[in-house]
Length: 447
Ligand code: PA5
Image 1 (cartoon, protein in one colour):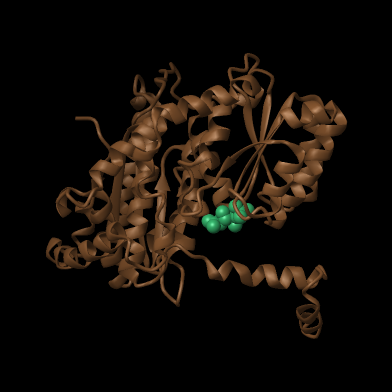
Image 2 (cartoon, helix red, strand yellow):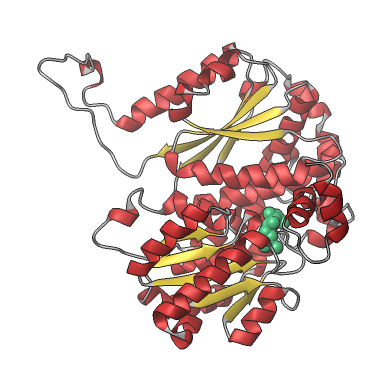
């Protein structure tokens, strides 16, 4: 049967199956805490059962609501940061044509991003491009007050209004935000934007299956029904009724915590498919923001192979032995290109004649896994049958579920992010934001 497979057999030369089993009870207690909803941060568990709560009618509603906008949009600018941006980007980039922006026959709007950085040149160049394009905006912020997207949206809103007039601009802007709180909700109400709600009980990094992810993806032609149905399938495989050995989320959470306790403090998420780069970025936020607390947590890092084998490969092979790898492998490439023969064979590649590029990629993957094992890097492998909306839905939900379990195994609250406020306080003090006068005086004394 085709399914996402989790293979932990290549950690056993570092941690025995018996040691992993010894941690299974603790894993199941953490899983129980998650499903009972009696752990820390339990007011943010809305994501857990979300896939089965999204009805077909809700998906139809979203698809229909954005159909008109899709027709007149060449570029969709998704404005948001962190959890309000990475889910849509992960799925979009995994499924879009690599060179979609240069293709003549545009099948669906291209998704571009704003508010995910504070780059002045980035914004300038984006505006230059948008001068020439038919564009629409989805602005996403749960709090409605995050500085980066708020600045970007203010600028883009002005640009769109100047370009098309207020009426048409209003028709091309969708807001995704809290049901009642925050500046964006107020603005959406005042301007009359179409809007969608981010449920109170779903935090940003767990929000890809809410309108935060689904609305921009639907506009850009992603099959959100398949995405959600993949998530639903995986939610069944991760259910507590599924025995530990067959439950991918429990097994992954258990294995990575066993490795962590044995001194493997860094997890490298490795892909051999360039379109998965932003899945790794999404995963880094999910695990980094959920687990990095109270002096604890596996540090989430990522590499894109084989590209990064030529930059990070040396460290992974021989650097400090605190790493383990989780490889995401895509079994079937969408397209086949075989390597041609050459009469002169000056590049000495004729031994590969007739082989597909993906065969070489798979041998690079396997060879690297074995080399890293020899170098002391344990390996977890997750294989996807192919890269499409269904398997991505499964993959993202699997990581979310395992993250909840893993966070509780660490003994922290996986659903808050108190640490992200520290830089904001300093930035507001330095920007002399009203209300931060005391902090401004104190930070200036440190400069
Ligand atoms: O996961 C999180 O909570 C954060 O990454 C937020 O999503 C991010 O800071 C953006 O916040 P907001 O959606 O309130 O603008």
